[in-house]
Image (cartoon, rainbow, N blue to C red):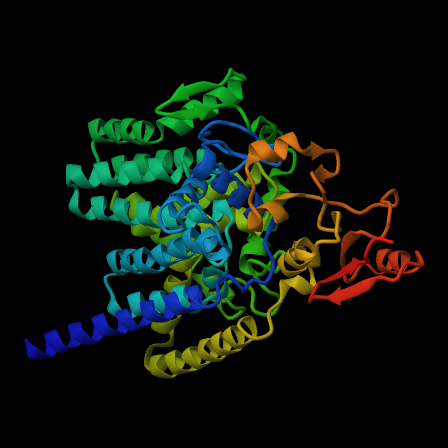
Length: 520
């Protein structure tokens, strides 16, 4: 008995240490790494600040269930979590740490509930610890939670929902059915692709549970009704968008078809190509430096064969159990993975859009490692030692690079905040106008220098508002008394300014140069 208790204590402390490491890797220097602000982060932050302080998004939609963003929309869960943080922790103010905090928390939810899910389905402490380590140290699980992309919350929400569903399969209690149904309803607030993923998955898994006698028809219908109730505002929003209905009020929120243009993204035309692309991107990278890096990939190159082996083993296990009408947890992940691929098939296959697939990849990866371990038999200890060394070296190299040398600003300098240059230019009393070579949008400015949307609207003009201009073109008049913030890599524009003949003062920043001259 004492040995069992000691073993349980060691297991608990190991998990606690792993979770602490996971939190550190997600929280340390979160406002500095990555060293750019994604355009959707800026739009989300601006909307959240406006909603927290004025009850409207930056397009003057009153408490929208789906905030507008660059003519489309953003999923409500992330935005309103930031609104809550602004009104509580921030006391009306917003900074980059607060903006990225929901992503960090969601990433930790994936670690904790992903570990609990593996413990539930494998019932093997070694498999659970392996999964916890992979969740903690694999690149994608670290990187996706360190910047404020609204869709990334779907991975955390889906992980919780799958865990609660697995608990229902084991326990069969009505309260557990209510919990997982409500959780899948909440998933639909996290990302628009869940509008396809959730119904397709729930149809597949419910039919399977009926076949395996894990749920009755009455309970299956009850579950569907509960999902609809939990997701009712989203379902009403979808209705307004699809049917082109006018805006309506519901529970204090506005349901309006603000993202109807996104329907154009849904198409059968490239269904097969989108799926092929996402299979490649999710196992390697898609060239965008915020989610995965060449050389490290999403789960490290060493993981790819184990994912494939685990996928094949899951398919075989599911076929065998299906014939016997015996439930297999593998079908839980296979059906969710299938539903995810179907959703991606209708839309362009960007890696961030497939974030929810990674809980299935985790299951396949752990299953592949276990299958290889069993195949090795007498050499199992040597296999584990060798594989552990490979993952340890991979993680050490990735973490060392990510926290010391990683800089997407080198690839996307137009997404680097120019806060210091702007603040300095604003502090100069002789400067009348500030012109910014700054991706042509004011969201990058208003995120860090927020102003009332009503005041901005009153002072708006074609190139900005008030004395602020958010683009520099060939038609821009360069004159003393104005300040010009230019990207360092825009050598042509810099040369043009310097050739105007004025005595410019030049202040250099990491990605920008500030040009200004006193009025003559």
